[in-house]
Image 1 (cartoon, rainbow, N blue to C red):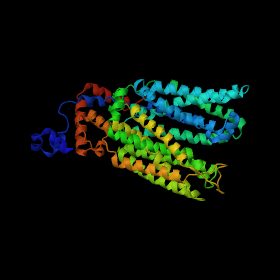
Image 2: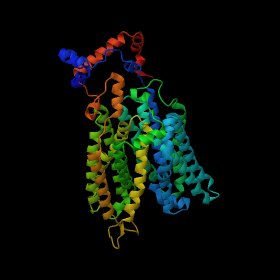
Image 3: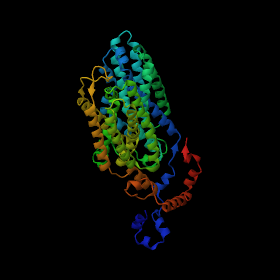
Image 4: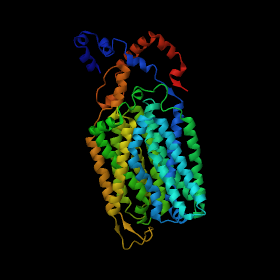
Length: 523
């Protein structure tokens, strides 16, 4: 910091005293950008917007996996095969990929409010149509499944409108020391919805005749959340931005932003490597029951392992979000967690092939979720940091698309590598018993490969934090990520603060603002 000051002031710095050399970093003229800092506000209303997004994200996830935990009952009631029931979930993945680009454009161009409210209405209409299909299908049972599929498709269209929003909301409504936490809370509401669906569906629909009641249970909160979103979200952004970067959010046009991302080497490394991580977690969640049943583990135990995976993941995400908000060590946190995730994936590929090792399997699933799930929100924030000033929805949305595309490829590849087993006395899989030994080794290998690539190849500056520092203090920070974390020399911080105070006290407008309690946190 002192070296930067000396380079700026030349011989003046060498002839000055040590105290003046530290203060020479402060601009002599009043900084116009610094005066903008006086008008940055955070609003209590931001927590309401975050709550609505969390409820909406949770509701959409529950609609996604409504039928998977009660596949047999659903197939009997809708008069289709299990493959048809699987498509009620797969439609979310199929629809999300082509619609993702339109969603990122909508978020960065039309704004947060229009996107979220549209997602809420689509989510509600999808939930209601599923319920209406069961009531109106009494006279025409053949219409039940097509109408339910249309309802699921509406929910699938709503998913990218909702799941791409956390990074954008955190950037527009929350200050820099709360962004990672806000992103984490909004992002983790989706796996929470998955967990609730796996609990509620088996409890509410123990027989096929109870499917209509189950769909009503899911439709009711969807209607309430739609009302909250329509009434509660009054604007896309607060009247006064919470940070310097929020003023220039989505400053790059959509097409130009895509071009910039394709030329950004650190972003491309994150796009491929973290997309692979998303694919590994999708494979784990989708194939867990099929993998464990071969060794004699029951469906209840597989469900318990899936629940542990999600619960520990949410706990890990909460802890990591708070840590990153405090330290700004996005790169270090992501690299360390990806390394431990690769080790946990290797461990799962080994213990899942062993019989009567329930404790080991449960522990590995918990560790897998703790380190793997916690990366998601931090990696999304990191995608914004390394690609700024490209819009948050664009940078985070492309990573989600990468994860979805790789998920489809991974599932197809892993299923193709399975082999039918002639005899497996302990199996609880039913008629078709498959060996998952080779697919599990391949999944662990892919996870390890891309984790190593990320650790070795990913290096970037924190562009958004640097831009905020420059706008605030008028000085260009070093490109070292460790310094971009708003770490500065104490002497410089004190003198910068004193300089800011001297400017502020001479500015009548500032006096009026600082006397206003709403300057710190507005309602």
